[in-house]
Amino acid sequence: MRRGGFTLIECLIGLALSLFVITAGLEFLARAQRAFLRLKAKEEAGQAALAALDRMRVDLLHAGRGLVAEIEAGLVVGAEADAAELRTTSLERPLALAAAVSAGETRLRLDSTAEIAAGQRLALRVGPAGEGRTIVGVETDAVLVEAPLERGYAPGSSVLSLLETVAYFLDGRARVLRRRVNASPAQPLLEDAAAAVWSLDPDARLVRVRLELTIEGAHPHETTVFLKNPALAGIR
Image 1 (cartoon, rainbow, N blue to C red):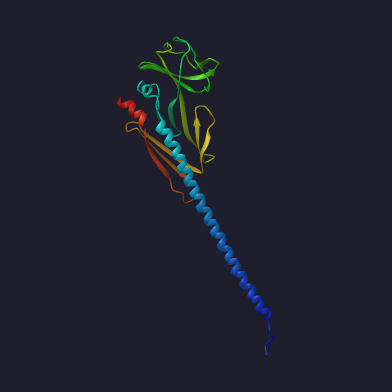
Image 2 (cartoon, rainbow, N blue to C red):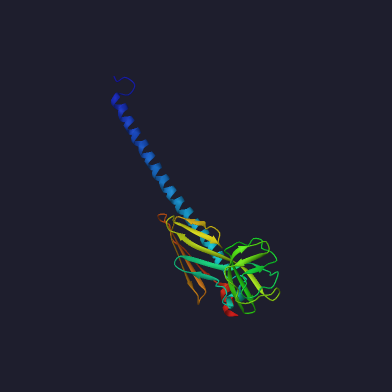
């Protein structure tokens, strides 16, 4: 008659089976966790790409905002694109001359120079004619431009516009899409960016943007934006 309990062999077999079940379970959990992390990374990257496209879409819709007359006069281009950068220009705010300025001068007295920085662009216009200049210095009541003016401008009859320029470019080494406003340091907009491709159709006033990600399995994201303000300048 067999005594109660397990033999050594039975214990060893039971232990081996337990280890096999535990190992298989841990392997399943590890694979499930890796799959979850891949899906999470893919989802987060996709959401980040969509957010970046939304930011670019807003800037493109603002391209040429408040500058229809300046675009008509050829002083400003609402949007530009080349292989390296996508750029938009819009009105940051109008400025007012505090005193008349003559042709050949580089110093413009203003009612206020608050929140104006060197490196920003100005558009000066009288009627359908004018010119653009880059600010190289800011004083308490005046700004200095990089080249002498070609014509004179007087308060009341002149339109002086402070421009906001937004540029997008891909930092290929860091795999980061960056956004720069005026001359300020560029800020990261989208990480894990494998490619950023844009094209501008000046006749149709359409900009197409395509963003590709380095995340495995992530789909490219695209958008097409109609440049309404440059189109208005062409219609008028």
